[in-house]
Length: 322
Image (cartoon, rainbow, N blue to C red):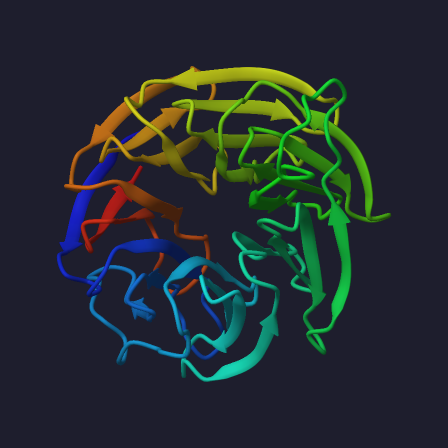
């Protein structure tokens, strides 16, 4: 497995780019498009092979965009801003479909259910995961993140600032990562807390489940480590290290054989999951890499894998994955 640089766009946004996500191909749009969100309060769409901009930047947020997620059908996406609004929009037109409001600093990372019927948001300072239905965009529930047994009390009440969230590909598990390193796992069918996953003690900013094993969860942490958990059985099954600083973002390849990470050490790394080792380091960026995203399978003429990365240096890069 390897990455080969294809294209970079400098000045893709006017400010730091903190979010990237691929919207899958649709019946009306035969290819996936790359979406990026930045502190310049805009979202941009890019063609999948030459990174040509698709239309003007989409506005609608009063503060910077910190997280993006695309609906699995590819038509809609959700963007989270520091203004605490989640804006659901049409990928192709940029038009707003719904605006979900939360109290200040109570929405961070977002992810759609694999079937697209719910949107989960890491609840930031609320110490919870918030869920909305995607038909009428009404709140479903809010899942509190319990304090781990034996955890020391802190001065901030619950002390949980929830940064990241992920659904298992079968939709049965929901996991979230917090500022203190806590990872909470829920039964997503019954909406009940199951257990914590232990091993990190610093912010867990990004996580993703394997597309080939619905129990396997990959986590990225400020402790410079990537952990591999069996989220159902509550076990740490592997750990990988190599970044010189915080691991800010992680995504898994559609074939389930590799993960890519972005770090504040300014690099993108490709990791062989079976070998538990870093196999390649890409140094396209001159500042920290806030987002990495593999293109989903499907669409006309899609023969090769693609990985995108986005950085504080206002650039985006596209790589061939093979």
